[in-house]
Length: 372
Figure (tube, rainbow, N blue to C red):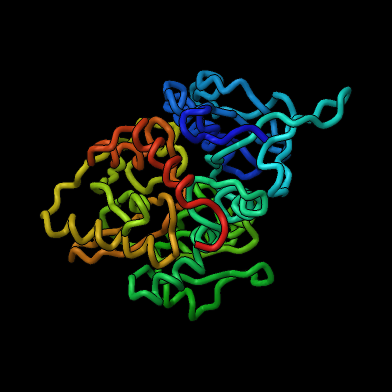
């Protein structure tokens, strides 16, 4: 093993891992293009770009952000590279290249992993568990927080335990076909039907009549066998970024952002609206009283702590006409795409994109692995 990044002996080696097996593969690759571009100009960091194909193969790629750019309405995809593996071996702490003609060979030590992975097998505690086994520090939440935040049912339960409000919902487990009449009456219409463990609005349907429920459940189950049905909440959509405090201090919140869907796509913030259509406008900060903005930031930090967050998160809210703040969900690995609000909120708060990425790497190095 080579010397670590101490005393200027060498740069910090950061493995940026992206793509993956989830339905959010393309969004992950798009996020990675921005992260790779931000790290490329660093004098302190050496990037090891690792893409995971949709089938789960780990590939050492060129790391060229242009290869991961969006082309029209086509999302980028990881296809080729040198196959690598990351052993769950605390003595290895690095990637091994797999070459059919040569066998397995050590590629490089890794000091920090930046898992720019959205959805299952990346944002849900699975890769975090692998990295804990391998004793490699990583950006973002640990195993528990990642798993809980990904599962919207259990995230809501932990938020409720801390006295943080979320909207009415019902859970359909794999053996349950539909909602009972009493559940339909409790939730009312309109409602949203979504995968319990998904993101980027993939697999979500809005229903305005119960005759649409079965189709919506099937759409959600194409992503996840466990489904949530949530009562629609009428209100403004607000997001707020949270970072783990520097030197282990309390979490810090960014200025919030308000999302407004405009034009012919006025309605809800679905996948096409987020990534394919020019149909959204954002206000950072929202046009709200200063005390309400302070409440949003404080509540975002409370939600982060309630789920045992680490590194970073984005907390999504609804703000009702009575100025009641309702937590919608928490994303432990928010988007880093060119239109993503997490980096934009921090830039408006005084932390530009390159400095934000560098801070996340420093936080991961300081925190390390294991119980903490």
